[in-house]
Length: 291
Image (cartoon, rainbow, N blue to C red; front, side, top):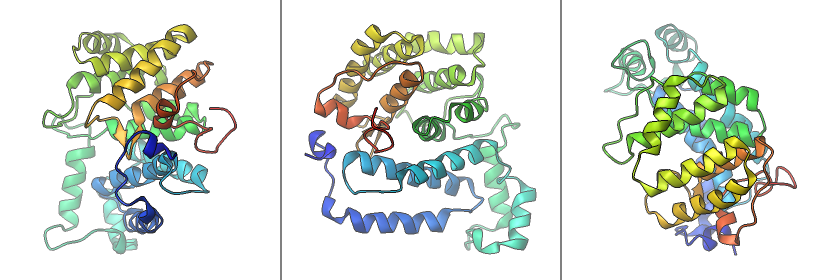
């Protein structure tokens, strides 16, 4: 059985995924290089689709390693690049205007303003979108074992970064948890992150508590605790509907936790086929013979 079948995911005409892959490639070409923040986030989402689709068994992707590399570079540029600044937009306007998504309602000045509202973190009112790009960057870089580069991405965030507005779909403690993940990976852990961790631990949501238990075991390098907590986290992912970790059927949070555990020298636990199906590993994506 394919992984999406093991997980009971409605693939919506899986026989059409070869055609959908071509459509995805075409959309990637449309958004790549565009210096508008929404297009940059969409590019990261598109590049994340490739390993998720391969993991689920929707379609075979032979060059997944290159697509992971492209994804990592897109995330690095998102956090560390100057593509969103007025100076760069004006340069693109002169040199490569075809990259600007000009519409009757969207001119160059509007692009500059929109970018500043979402990317200029020197402004107290900045609506910076960080958690999905961060999680994607850890997955891309972790699967490629580029941990120094992952640390560079994570160091762009500190404990004072506010939760994103989610209209109540994601609890603040979940954002706090991901800031703690970034704090540990960047090596910049301080009292601010400790306070966020304490806040997350007080959360009454079982799903987050399961994630925290698995993550803490991974960070501590505690194989016995990880063998117990990691399967429990995957089970809670499978049981919960509309989980913010789910992407095309794959469990992104558990993938992040496994990659951190692997970095700490832990072994992948013995799991049922169904639990294995949810987590992307180097082995499941054909990057290595070991998870």
